[in-house]
Image (tube, rainbow, N blue to C red; front, side, top):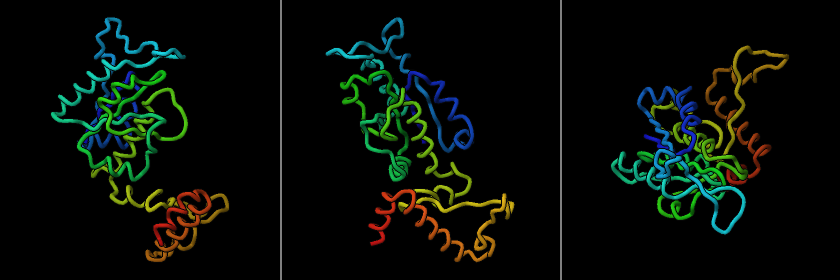
Length: 232
């Protein structure tokens, strides 16, 4: 799977994606990334990519031409239409099911906005889906794009060394993950639950499921309500 990221700050993208699990997955050929500098496609000799908004108002708006040409270059390189996602607070909320669905794509292009936004005309031309990672405003789309890439990549075969790691964790089946423990058995006066030391895998699984339900009910009643709906 390949990710294309249209951005004004490719160094923000490259620094993160070449480290840790994503970096190893890239070196193993499971996924690949290409950060594309939108400024490389502007026709302005000063590399300008923004201008004042029509109708007045504060700030600047990213222009249509360099973004459109950058995206067209992505499609030409891929040899087909590449799904384009725009990161914006106006988009649908990015969720674990969305990550699983997007992981089935051959490649994805993520468009990172800046300033007061992007000329609506180019969004109408190239964007397939709009996503938000939460109800707050950031300075640009780079951090949301990294969040999405990380979540999506975890669902791509071969990225995680333990095949269960992408399945048995928070948000699966609308439940939060159960508590985790490691050595030593006693730390700061607190002991690991006895059931986890029993070796009885069936009992351990039952305990973990019970704790997942309890934790979800306490911390995320919204998810707990969805869990109950599915159970019914």
